[in-house]
Image 1 (cartoon, rainbow, N blue to C red):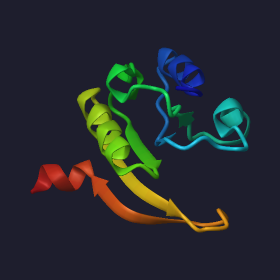
Image 2 (image 1 turned 90 degrees about the vertical axis):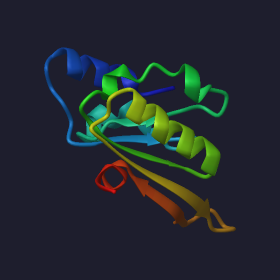
Image 3 (image 1 turned 60 degrees about the vertical axis):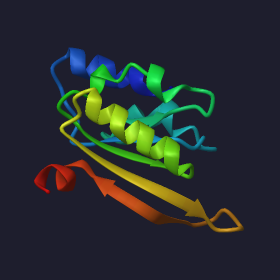
Image 4 (image 1 turned 90 degrees about the horizontal axis):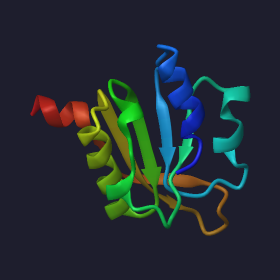
Amino acid sequence: MRGHEPLIALRRRGLRPALVDIDLEPCPWRNWSTWPEWTTVPQIEVQPADSIQLLDLRFLVGLTVQVSGFDGPRVWALFDACQAAGAARVLAFVQVASPDGLTVRTTEARDSAALTEA
């Protein structure tokens, strides 16, 4: 997992971002490494070799989290892990890229707030 250290530092100072973006796909622009310079939304990247079950997600307690990726079972596993870690709300999106890789569309979505209302 990459990009979470600056978020942990924010949390230790008593700050909490309005949203945390967790991506299961490697970003060619390495957003996770520079997000504090250009956005207030933490950009976290889970590596393909990372075990979702072994991630320490305690820094998400009380936060709204957006999860996205191409592998549905991994997206749903991370959705569940974020909820179990104490995130206030989790939005998850399974996506598919166009053949040229220039666009991405969502094929499935889940919102933990909608699940608790049911």
